[in-house]
Amino acid sequence: LQEIEQFLNSYLEIENYQTDSFINGLNVSGKERIEKIVVGVSPNMELFKKADKWRADLIITHHALLNKGMLKDGLRGVIRDRINFLLSKNIPLLCYHLPLDFHREIGNNVLILEKLGADFKRQAGELEGFKGIFFIGRFPKSVSINVLIKKIKKLFQQEPKTVLFGKKAIKTIAVVSGAGTKLVAHLPKEVDLYLTGEITESVPPLVKEMKINFIAAGHYATEVFGIQALAKKLEEKFRVKTKFIPVRVPY
Image 1: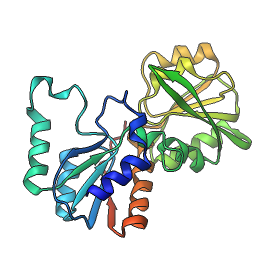
Image 2: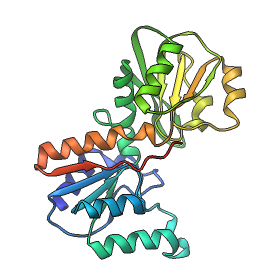
Image 3: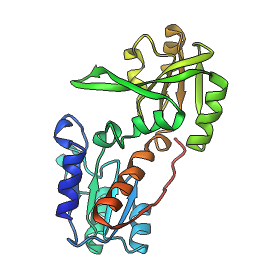
Image 4: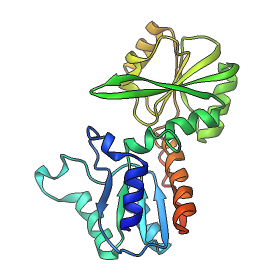
């Protein structure tokens, strides 16, 4: 466990994400010898029970179980129950939030660009002290927005929410996996399409005024790729068995 934790903390450079509200790295300790690892998007009881049924020695999730302000009111409710289950089974939990979104090799954003056929060009934007919010990609040739929507639907396995007030031929795309709606106003001017996970009431009027295209493909759906790639990385380095267990959320 210690070897895996140290490797991931270093490889994902968690020291660069001190402003992340989630606790990256070890959230719950447990058994030390690891042979079977379950990975998933979020740390919930359904995932934990399925991991235990598979007799996992370790669970790794993208979203963290704990955030930095969670225990101000004490350990209670659902979080207490989840932790108690892990402790009773002696299963440790590692979590990597922003480090797994923004990693240049196995991060959600760069993998989404790759899977859509866009070449990653640069990171851009800054908010609340965090730089490189947007992953900017360019398609080798302009892609019809309708063709791209079909490709997005197939990739994320659900109907995306679209707000289309921009160009019909897409050349430049910006990606932020998960909850990226509050970032719309900060988009670089050259972006033809902004792809993120969620949408809020304020987005359509803003997108209309900016004359761009916006697609929300689902928070969960845009954050499965990084944790799956991380599992493959661990298989190669540590010769462990891994299993991705989906607990799908259509939002």
